Amino acid sequence: MNIQKLLASKSVKVSYLTTEIDKTGVKEFREKFGLSQTALANVMGVSKKAVEKWEQGINRVSKSAAVLFAVINECPEVLNIIRKVKVKDSRGQEFDYNNVYKTDICIDETDVREQEAKFYVVDCNYAVA
Image (cartoon, rainbow, N blue to C red; front, side, top):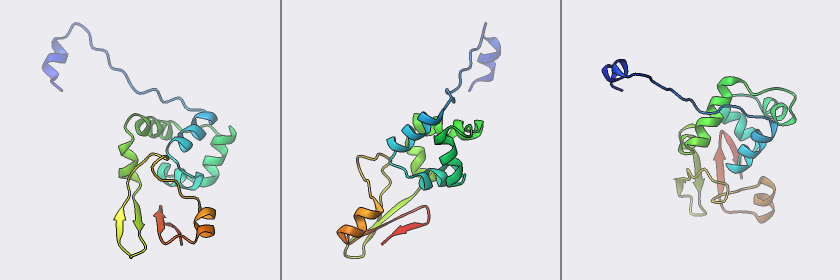
């Protein structure tokens, strides 16, 4: 940013991300990125109970959390910086799976156990085996 140009300008307009998010927005965000309430809590640095209360409309999302929601929505790769997903295949080979969209990977603990899958996903210190 060139300060001299700013000072010489007739006017300067600064805009910020929209950070308003309500209970519907929290749930839509979570579903968009394929996050469980627990995973979203880990991403946002809050408890699962806080996420539940946001989604029920009992508590409002804090300004700092609302900014993080907006940043991730605007730049989804930020989620890959916050959350690392590692997958181990049936041969024991482990690799990073850092794709943020639900359509690319969606693993449900119940489905994994029922299908006796030959891999596991480690997400925010939570393992499904």
